[in-house]
Image 1 (cartoon, rainbow, N blue to C red):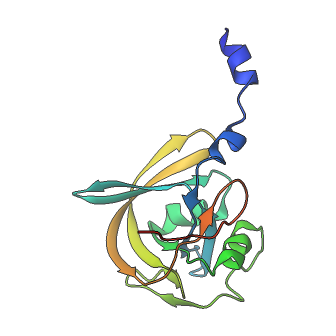
Image 2 (image 1 turned 90 degrees about the vertical axis):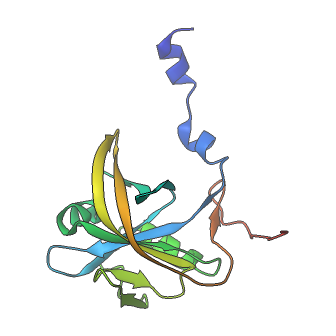
Image 3 (image 1 turned 180 degrees about the horizontal axis):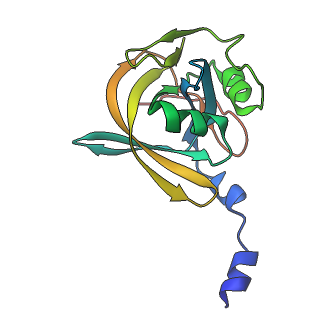
Length: 164
């Protein structure tokens, strides 16, 4: 089988949709100091020493542009009640924070109220990733709350059932 015929059989969106993920919103400040953010599901811990996380943002994302300038950001892990926030930050809305409750964290970046956890980071490295940029963040502070995570699976938000 040639590479061309293999590529014709690839439906990465459908394939990746079979892997359940948590949902997060990455937030930062734009060049005018205003808050901006985007919904992400591409997130993983990378290293404990030093503490590093990896996220991916579309190269056309205004949030990526702002993050490149500010060099700091917050990963807001959404709770099961925050599906509307996930959808809101996935939109192209101009002012995503006009209806969202948030506070300002230690790195002076927005932290979404009610999130399951916050991880404030500084940019450690940026790497090319096709139509996305891979952002490696050095975790500077974290905060966790109780509750259930918001999950995403096959373009839906299934209910989390903790059986542990």
